View 1 (cartoon, rainbow, N blue to C red):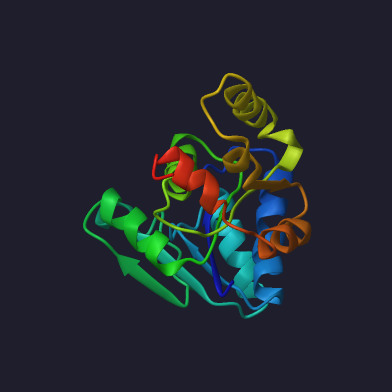
View 2: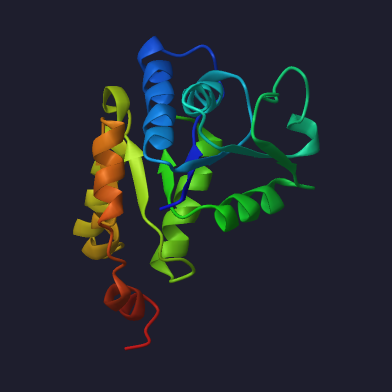
Length: 193
């Protein structure tokens, strides 16, 4: 993986452990020579993951929209910032630039990006790994919901097992590096078998 797109929250009003983990995620990416693709913000976990990567001289590309490209929100020290016309174009550009995806803790925007990425893998639109940095067990309830969806027949186990999870950035990257896309499950899901 040469680049990872990180989805995460932009709120500053969160526990310090989340910010520390985001910074460590950025450091881990830069240490492994993996470029960071993210939403371009300087606040919350967004700012911390960028600062972590930048602290080791890592490449950081921000992808944003005009209304977020402001002094109050946009990080000004990035390797490059791309401004897209709208949120749909922003997500498409982030997907295009990335070789994998990681969701840190975040809210509705983070979940939207995460689930779109998982859905695209499920339907064969990409064959890139997806991971969750599960700081403070933030994603525990979501992981339980995913497991319940498998039990109830709404999600194939192969697709659920393709979402990697760890509370340690280095371990998460290592797990994602061994990703094997479940092509047989995609064919079953898309009813091409």
